[in-house]
Amino acid sequence: METEKLYDSFGRRVRSLRISLTELCNFRCIYCTTSSISILPSSHYLTRYEIHRFVCIANKLGIEKVRLTGGEPMLREDIVEIVQSVKTTGTQEVSITTNGSRLAPMLSALKKAGLDRINISLDSMNAERFREVTLVHAFREVMQSVFLALKAGFPVKLNMVALKGLTRDEILEFVGLARDWPLDVRFLEFMPLCGEAWRPDLVFPIGEIRSIVQDHFQLEEIPRDDAPAQTFRLISGKGRVGFIGSLTESFCDQCSRIRLTADGNIRPCLFSGTQVPIKALLRENAPDAAIAAAIREAVRIKPAGNAFRNQSFDSSEETLRGAGPAIRKTGG
Ligand code: SAM
Ligand code: SF4
View 1: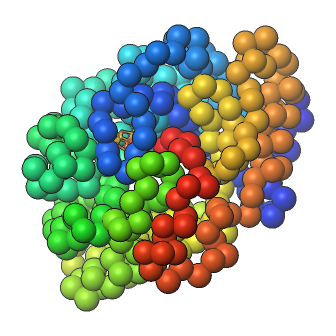
View 2 (view 1 turned 90 degrees about the horizontal axis):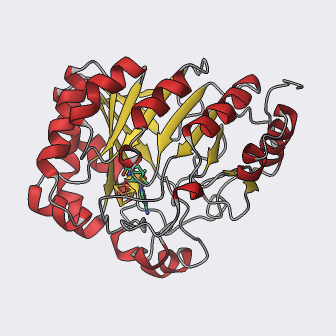
C-alpha cells in the first residue's frame, strides 16, 4: 500500500479524524437532531474491529489525531475497548467529545485505556436552564464529570453553544471557570446543521461573544495552526478561552479533518453532502490499498470550506433564516 501523506486539492494536509460511534443520544439538545430511539440493527454501526482497521490504514496515510464523537459516544457499551483499540494503532492523540452524563464512573477505565483528552459539552451552569437546553435532568452528573475529569489528570475542554436569547448572561461566568480552573472554555456558534431544529433567533454571533469577553478579561492570543477555535490564554487565569464561529467567521482555511460516520461513510467535511462509503469494503475484507484509496478519494473531494465561508454575514435574522434548510444533520 502506498503511504504518501494526505493532502487535499487545496494543499491542506489532513491529519485528524473524527469518528462518530453512534447516531443515538440520551440528551435532546434543542439545537441537535440526534435520536434516542434506535430501530436500526447493530450491523448498521461499524464494529470496534472495523474502526481499528480503518484507523490503522488512516495512520499510515498520516492521520495523527482521532476524536471519538457521536451522537453520544459514551452510549457505546464497548467505548473503553474502542479507545484502547484506537490507541494501540499508534495514534498520537485519542480524545472524546461527550455530553458528560455517563463519564464520571468511566474515567479511570478510559485513562487506563489510553484516552488523552476530553471535551465535555456544557451550555449552562444553571440547572434549570441546562434542562431547558438539553431537555434532560443531568446537570449534576455533567458538572461532576467535569471536575472528576480534571482530577483524573485529563486535559478538559468545555464546549458551550452560546444561545442568544437563552444563555447570553452566562458568557462571563463560563470565562470565570477558565480563570479559576486549568481548563479550556470554547464558545461555539449555533450552526444550521440541525434541520427542523434550526433557530436563527438563537444565533449568537461569535464576534459579539468575543467582544463581551475582551471587555472584561485580558487575553493573549495563541497561534491557531489547524485548530477550529481561535484561542486565547487568560492573562490572569489558569485556563484558556476559544471561539468557534462556524457561521459568521470561517475556520475552514486550515482545516485538517475528515470524518468517519457511525454507519461507515467517510465524510470530507462536517457540512458535506457527499461521502465515500467504506462499510462494504471493510465487511468484504477488501485489501488495505482499497480502503486507502477510499480515504484518498474523500480527501480529494474535500471542499474548500462550508457553504457560508465566502458570505459576509450581517447576522440579521433574515440572513440567518436562509442558512438553515439546505443543510442536513450529519453528527458530531
Ligand atoms: N454528544 C456529544 C456532545 O454533545 O458533546 C458529542 C456529539 S455533539 C454533536 C458534538 C458537539 O457539537 C457538541 O459540543 C455540541 O454542543 C455541538 N453541536 C451539536 N449541534 C450543534 C449545532 N447545531 N450548532 C453548534 N454546535 C452543535
Ligand atoms: Fe446529544 Fe451531543 Fe446532540 Fe446534545 S449535542 S443531543 S448531547 S449528540
